[in-house]
Length: 298
Image (cartoon, rainbow, N blue to C red; front, side):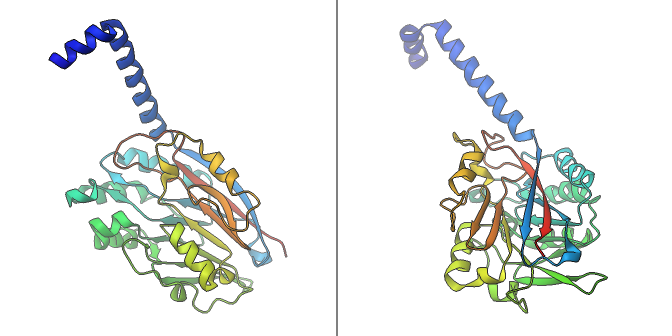
């Protein structure tokens, strides 16, 4: 009470009320931003993409974080926006639930029910593929795996799948385990891939796997690397497009926070994700799903 009286005497009641209103309005703005899910559209060209796969459409989403701050309706909104764009392939790159900060060691199974209800209407003719994130491994890898399997997703942690079309041409999609909570096995994620094959690589955490791929030469076998985890910083005082601009025309990204970038000939996209953690706020880091149109240079 003494502290409050001192503040009132020093700054005046009116100034403090104005300050508190500004804080409240700013918090409401950040909360609204965290719910303002957007769709980003990008076109990418690839030398190795078979001509018969030209113009296939890929939907990318990450960091759904079903639970504490993310409702079933938000996840259903994501699914509706994905399906409205009629993707050929759906890719999810980790962190599907969030019960509480990790140090609480708390897992709420109801979050799996919310996730299942939110993604059950997703379909794609060439398949749905996913890898785990750090929160998934902290909370319940088994429950999340079962939920995705029951919804006909193929889990690709340290694994790979080849998709062959009626022309007998193929592409591959591989995935690695989360760097923070699992093993990262690029050799399994690119198994049987030739340097002139088209391969998409799924990762949750981007920075360290990209360094490994460059250092050990795996990027020669990967055409398109996709990841999440960063949330575009979630609460940032720098608009996300500036992070993307920092990496423009660079052969290796200066920062792996958000957006389009490349590592030599390997194209990269890091998404800001769908949900939120720690606080139900976002600033200058809108939640998004990404629709990628893959084009062949052949």
